[in-house]
Length: 590
Image 1 (tube, rainbow, N blue to C red):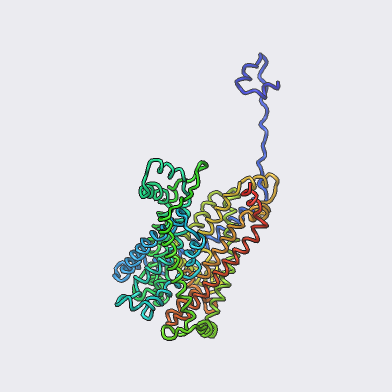
Image 2: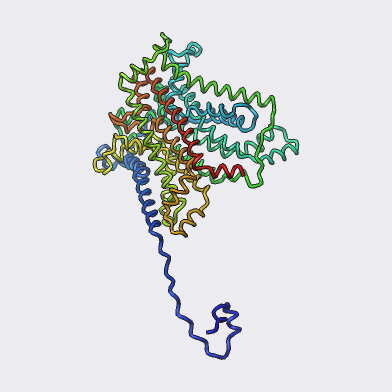
């Protein structure tokens, strides 16, 4: 066989043939398949374990609620009888209507306030933007109950401004809406700041060149560019409002809502089947808003390109002064609400003796043994802040940076974002149904700190997962490709390259879990035991028993703990960034 018959394509080989008989074609050469590295199989095994863990702690409790809703008290199949009984009860329908219109009103009030505040921070030249932003985010560091307690001290039956209200009452829908606006404002603000920050200055330059008025620019350029952020913020606020338990429990009075109905059915009446039905009713509007938000996110297009010019606001004295007045007024309201609860915790006997005292801390918390709940919350937050980021980030790494098991990856991704559409109260009820039966091998963790850690991490898993995925997508896949070509195990690359590069995101996840573990109420209200009662749950119990002073003291203690933790995280991040993020600083200087 000539060399040309091997190297030339078939058409060329036809032209070079002679009268000689055609040579016998060579036997096919067996190509050995590339054997996967043993570390790839280890990665597959770890991904399977992560899938099993998410199935047990995310999917199984939700499925158990669905099963419980069609069973009677003895566990026999009851069909849709519980749903028919629910639909035939006018009082429960009233709770549905109350939850919907209160949540809608809170959303309608929060969005304009948060949008104006975010607009001032991103489109004006006001001073102290960082301080104003931090003051607006203060409610994130305290339980939602703190807002309700503060409004009681301001406008309750013995509140400072009660004479101004006449016959009106803060207990009921007015107090619930006001407290929800305060609690949801920072959640909407963070989304809207991001939406308004992604702006191409060329659009405004073109509008100015065409002589477009300021109002027309707002409705044709600003608002359309931020519409997806506005919709997302609205969905988040509505979901938070309709699923919150602490605020209607503290300040709602006799005003029925779905979240408090679940609590009464499960704790007061021990009617778990009906509680499952109400949980599913609460899940419906949350699922609808989650689906709407997901569809909006898919339709969103990039607003910034490689040719985009960052928008720099121009100085306008009248506009800047008006925005500054609005922002400082909102900041003053935030301080007034937060400060009232803190101040009341030091008042000796409200409203008769305003002398400052530590009696609520010393007698109400320490001598009453209630301070143990704060210690339990601190332990819970510490464990969540360590264990949560490890599992979340490792699972996200296995999904994004390893290969194989495509179908399993889709399943794990679905479970990772599923908790975003499940209210904490529903998730906690699902944990009761799933872990209480003695036949469950995991029954032993019920009413222990372990189950509180699990439900807290799962409750906030979706946000942590999306943060981790965003950080991992910023890293070039060549790191893993080079490691694979050099036969370096994936866990070496993970530890030496990925973790140091993504350390800021890891610290953000840890801080997020710590603060939320200190302040969460709804997800843990059904799961604590005699020795694992948490500070946030204790606030509800103290308020229910009429000890609003110690309740304010406990809320203040949680707030101060969260503030101290955030300061510690900030200092830790600065120290670690000097050691692990020098490459970012060098790139910025270049």
